[in-house]
Length: 507
Image 1: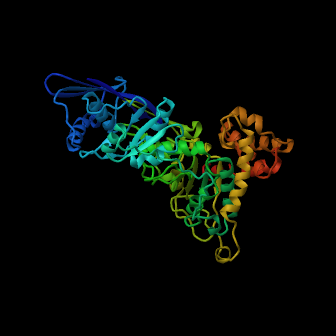
Image 2: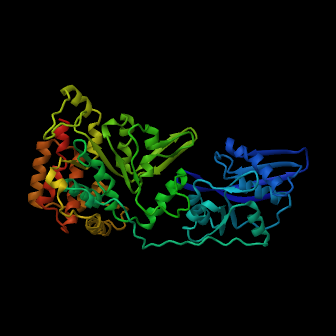
Image 3: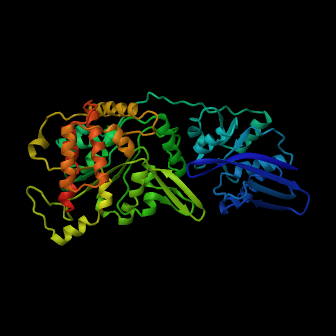
């Protein structure tokens, strides 16, 4: 007998349809699995055989051929176990239910338990888009699948539950979508904990309001890491589409917290400086997202920036420009989104005390030069805001003056972002930092005084065309924070000062 069962797989962040075909015919007992399976898929023969036996069913003593179509696409992973099991049960006549409107995803244990799989969210979305009405998924993946509307997500922990449902003995209730869109994300880290550093806080507020990359330079202990770790508390809340896209990345990477429905808080990724280029961009034999993609719609914080491997740092250049990272392997090419906000922190020199008011720098000129050369000019040029984090005195540190809270800063950031969303409606641009050159010319209108200052600075500072565009975009954000449609002299002057540190430390 012959049977077909529907399933899904995933490539990059996109799902695609799979059909598992099973043929049980007379002949010497044999179990062939075809359709470009990898080792994990080929091993499903033994898992399915043991599952059939341990669930009290009869494994056909016949010639069994299972094809996983399309046959020209390499199949990877163990989540084909469940559709292979269902297809064999149908082909052998032990299951007579109509499964045409159903899809199946899951890895099997030897006793019939259904183990969780990576990438369930994009696979459920693909099943819905293909017109499938119900999809059986592992119970541990039901939460993430439930956010997809228009399809019944049926959770199962054992194959016996699925067989009972298909035979009508005991139906599985679809897991219900339970999302509170009014959820308020609380954060223990607050800017009111940081004493002083008003210039740095102002720079990070601008960065958050416009989605700009930021580099902080300062001596050890000035609060660079403390400031960076709190930037998530002032970022605007994620839209539903951003939550879905971010959750898809974590689902594919197997990094989704257990029981989580959506990633509702903007990611904050802070990899160690020993990370490899592949860990940064993603990769492997079977490509998986790296830190750049795991920080999508959030923050990638690189502390001790010059200490990162040069190739790892330079791998940021193209994703920072394009918002995507493409990984090419012999098995295929995948593209992951990388719409990130880069926050980097570094010392001014190897010993860290260049410019310190009381401690003398012990570095030689050659050591300072080698240290500065660890960060290339093209990468610096892609960072919109450069800010020096100053030392604070005892009075500021011990004073009881109330500092501004993250909630107060976030209110201004949200107001500026709402102006940008209205401005860029229908263009696909999400914030000022993502403006195209054409959009920059259209929306960054300068007053006569501001234009004259920018012209003078462009010539005297030797700015690149990219730096010119970034100054315009930062100026646009500063104007948005002040509620001004026209970019004035003060807005440009402040934006220019955020491009001066590379001239100080990288002469």
